[in-house]
Length: 156
Length: 156
DNA sequence: CAAGACCTATAGTAACGGCTATATATGCTC
DNA sequence: GAGCATATATAGCCGTTACTATAGGTCTTG
Image 1 (cartoon, helix red, strand yellow):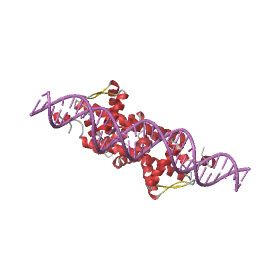
Image 2: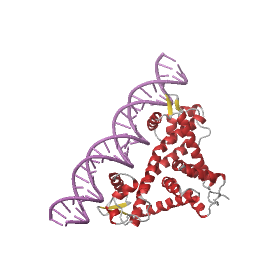
Image 3: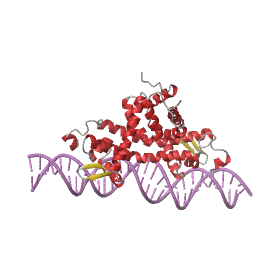
Image 4: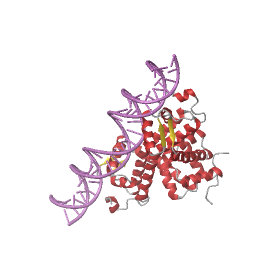
């Protein structure tokens, strides 16, 4: 314990340190999986709309350099989410496809929700990109409820 | 241009690459400022509720080691957000105080909004921690509207 | 089938945010 | 005021995600 917590209550109003720290830890963890989800989702989009997912295309979409993509793909491959066929593009494994599906559904719900709330389509799209990774199942369910019946949230 | 975009339209349905990349860039930027905001907000909480903001206390709250905090504080200090008085704690500059105020207001709005939407208080708290940094002014305004008049979003 | 275009891989660097271990400074207590 | 507990600083490490520069494959095309 630190001196201040001994001498006097450090924070009569703040939540307890342990759960606060847990919250931050969770946010940090989310940050790590964000990138993976972005990649998988993007690759799925390419495969379904264009037929091929190439490093250079992914790099352009994400606004990063090609070697950055190459390194990330190594990671995705190690985790069993994708298969790389040299000069023939990137393909998703079953696991990768499942993750892409989940991620995209969540993304779509968040974006639709924001739009339903009255946010402009452009902002909804942009904000959804950042928000989607931090939305729990419970919150996602609330978003869904609102989309179906706006103004009729779960509160009775 | 990549080969695939020459040979055939890479993505008839996907949004254009430039704005997509811009969205990702924005999310990446947000990730960078997240930590700063968390620190400043936390320091403000300590100063107001306990009187003192110490490295060890901050470390405990955030769930990281003290040297990690020390390094971040150097950064905050470099950016003119805080003043460090050795063994007397951390203090906010005017700029730091302003940032803390903005951040906390936003945080509070997000959390209140989620609760108003029917999300449990615990989840609202946890999710707000991650979401707050990715909410634009426009979305924040929509959240505020909903809090005041739930079910009466801006749509006519 | 050789040349050039294009895609991918690799090397080396940087910034950031973590960590442990350890040194140093301060304040409290006796 | 000396010693000890506590707070802070520093050193050195690691993993991640980005970058540039460049080397090396592959494919297409003349």
